[in-house]
Amino acid sequence: MQHLAPIALFVYNRPEHTRRTLKFLKENKLAEDSRLFIFSDGPKADADFEKVAEVREFIHSIEGFRSVEISESLKNIGLANSIIAGVSRLVSEYGKAIVFEDDLLSSPYTLQYFNDALRKYQDVEQVMHIGAYMYPLKEAKQLPETFFYRAPSSWGWAVWQRSWNYFEPDIDKLMEKFDKEKIKRFSIDGKMNFWKQMKEFKSGRNDSWAIRWYASLFLNNGLTLNPAQSLIHNIGHDGSGVHSNKENIYDVTISRAPVSMFPDVIRENQEAYTAIRNFLAHRKGSYIQRLIRFIKQKI
View 1 (cartoon, rainbow, N blue to C red):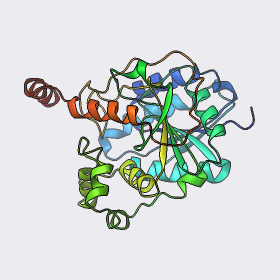
View 2: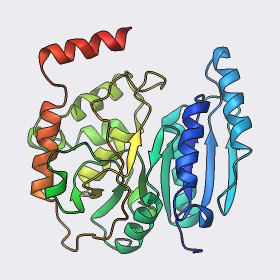
View 3: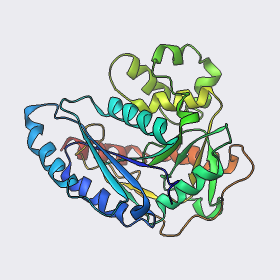
View 4: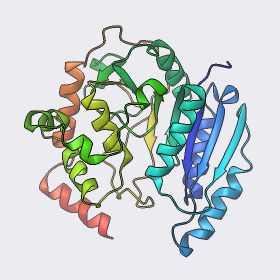
């Protein structure tokens, strides 16, 4: 078990979310043999001090893993900088890492899935990212148990040093490599606002590490491995997160079964791509449904 990937968990000011995330993570079959590294960002404003302190008090009581190491930032460096620094450190030391944020509930077999996939594809250059979340696809039962797809999910993922080395943080260097056709493919035939996120990062309207990671992966013809039925449920869409709205369109039922099938053919699965594209195209529902969701977010 000494070759299991270390787990990076990034926390901030949500004690209840952090408790639930760690409760589910501890119930994983490989938890007691895994090293856990918790990265706690410092408070951004005076109003955050109490919640950050509550989170830190809780994480110092964590048991149930092979080891627990806690890094507490004295100042607020933001989620993007926290993740980039934390992941870079762990892949440099261990060659790979599993990454969680403080609002992700996992299956008892999520760590097993990550470690099995990291071993199987460790020398396959085109496979650059292992994702554990998948949209609530109507076609999930008709798809292979796992498949390759172009866009990485940031809701529970794993990576090797060999692929993380391709991460380019400079948005200008990334954007200059896109043409009209690449933008279309990058944006899942225009069904997802990935290019808009790139432009918003450039203009300072977001601070996303994930969109830059996707662009880095995409420009290097990388693929991501994904389960047809999600092994992660994000509980952060309750209005509590710094970077999330109140919505339920991405809610899923976590698969409780171990993953036993991994593809040998290294190419994007077209049936899965079509299912995801169709979900993205219709995920916001009718005009009335969008209006109701907008009102709820404002309440």
